[in-house]
Image 1 (cartoon, one colour):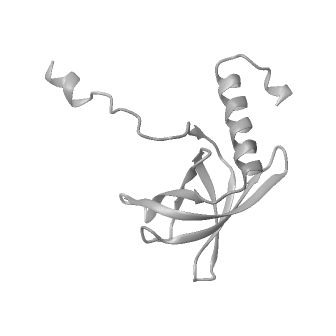
Image 2 (image 1 turned 90 degrees about the vertical axis):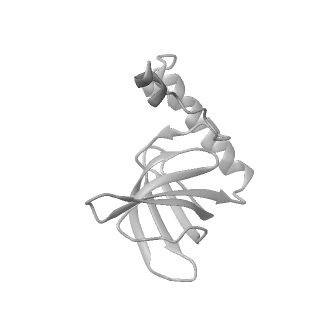
Length: 130
């Protein structure tokens, strides 16, 4: 019984459904002008999570560019670093950023992308139709 309590599920607090995704991201911390390229770990309508070897202070503003290679769709957005965790023994950091003021058409694209992913995962759509 003690074992179950230790591993009890924590209630989800996110506003948006987050899906695993490997997309190219370029970002620069504002006002620093160094551009870094990485692959994101997951994405939602509200933000992304990615790994980098550069420490980004919490609350930093980032200018990001995300590319969806299958559709060649890409967008730029302003984002804010909401949290950062050091990955032990790796020299890398996992970062969670929230999008700031992205246009509604981009939110719509992300919503459609996430719905397609969830339908494919559940077997409701043929992946070729996405």
